[in-house]
Length: 94
Image 1 (cartoon, helix red, strand yellow):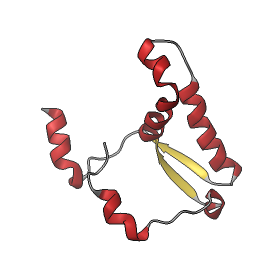
Image 2 (tube, helix red, strand yellow; image 1 turned 180 degrees about the horizontal axis):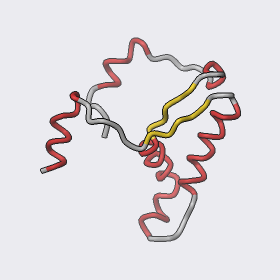
Image 3 (cartoon, helix red, strand yellow; image 1 turned 135 degrees about the horizontal axis):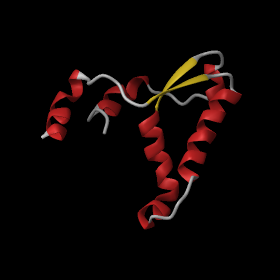
Image 4 (tube, helix red, strand yellow; image 1 turned 60 degrees about the vertical axis):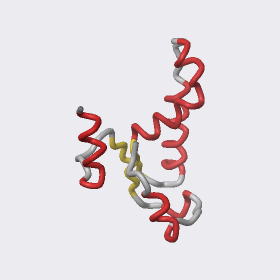
């Protein structure tokens, strides 16, 4: 998922900051990405078909962290197709 090679292109402008530095701002969150990352914490349960809410709990912790630091999260579950991903989207459709 994502745009192949994007992170290396952004390397020179990426820096670590505390979430507090976004106080008073609005943050758009890729909800599917967040859910996917959170699923790692309960991968065994998911694979074995064991009912769990751990991935939801982990997502909520991330969202709560933003809210506690006065950052308004907006969860985005899908968006427009990106020109940069046209080849990938075409492949997925096939």
